[in-house]
Image (cartoon, rainbow over all chains, first blue to last red; front, side):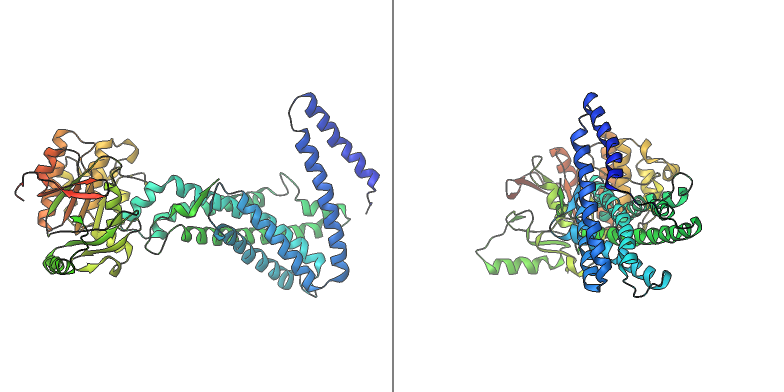
Length: 263
Length: 229
C-alpha cells in the first residue's frame, strides 16, 4: 500500500482552493462554507485518527463502549435536528436514539460474533468501523422516516380524526401514514443495494482495494455490509416509526399534535 | 343546559334521578378551560345549538365524542364514556364534522370497515344516489355530494346518539329538506339523542324541540317556539 504524505494531501487541497476561487469569481457565495467544511474534514478526521490509534492500542471494552456511546449520541442529535416537526421534550431524541441503539448495536454485535467471528468480539478494528457504517445509514433512514411521519400526520390531521370518529383505533387511523413513512426510510438502502457496483463502487470496498486487498475479499465484505445496513436501517426505521406514531396519540386514541414542536 | 349551579347538592341529586332515563347525560363537563356545564338529552330528543363562529360549538361536540380532552363525565344510557374503549364510544356517539374527509380513492372503500348495519341502500335512495355510487371516485364528488355521503357513512355505524355539526351547510334547499327528513327519521326510529348545530333559526324550529345558544362561556336556552317532536 502506498502511504500518503502531508504534502500529497496539500496537493489534493489545491483542488478545493481552486474551487473556492471560482466560487468567488462566479459569486456563488459558497466559498466560506466550502472552506469551513473542508477544514472540518481535516480536523475531525485527524482527531478520530488519533482516537482510533489509541483505541486500537488499548483494546479495552470500556473505552470502546465510550466511543460507541459518543457516536450514538451524536447520531441521535443529527436525527433530531433534521426533523421539521419534532416531538417535544426528550421524546423525539429518546425515540430516535433508542431506535438506532437497538438496531445498530444489535446488528453490529451479531456481525462481530456470528459473521466475522473475531476474538475478542469487541476488537476495535472491526467493531468501530462496522458500527460507524451501520449508525450512519440507520441515522439517515430514521430521520427520513420520522420526518415523513410527523409531517404527514400534521398535514392529514383532518383525515386521521375523521377515521378516529368513524371508530377506527389509533393504529388503523395512522396505518397508511406509518407504512408510507417506513417505505420512505428504507427506499435509499434498497436502491443502493440494487445499484451498488454498477452505478458506484461502495466506499468501503474501494478502500479495501486501495489498501491492497484482493477484489474478491473486498467484495465479500461489502456484501456482508450491505446486508447488515439493510437490516439495521429496516429495524431502526420500523422501531422509530412505531414508537413515534404511538406517542402521537394518547390512551383515549386522540390525535395529540400538541406534542409536536414546529421549527 | 345551564352552567353548573354550585348552590345545591340536593338539586343536583334530583336532576340525577330524573336523568336516569335520559340517554345522553353530561355532568360537570369542562373543555378547553371553560366553566363546567351539566345537561341531558332524552331518548330521541333533538336540541339545536347555535352561536357565532369561534364560540366553541365544534369544540363541545369534539369533547362529547372524546376526541379532545375534557373534565367531567359523559353518560350514554347510564354508562360512562370511560367504560367503553374510545373507538367503541365514537361508534355509538357519532360526530359529523362540518367538513367531511375522504382518503381512499372510491366512495365504497370508506364503508368497508364500518359496522354497515342499517338500510344503507334505502338511505342512499332517499338522498338521490343510485346504487352505483359506491364505485364513484372521491375526487369527482361535489361538496354537497360529499356532505350527503358523509351523513350516510356516519349512520352506517348505527350510532346511538348523534352530534351534527352543521350537517346541511353546503346543501341546496331541496337537499336540506331531504337530509332533515332522513336524520329526523333515524333519530326517532333509534331513539337517538341528538345535538344539531345550525345557523338557521327556521331550521332550528323544524328539527329541534329545545334551542340553545353559546354566548361567551355560557350555554343559554332560548325561548323559541316549541315544535312537536
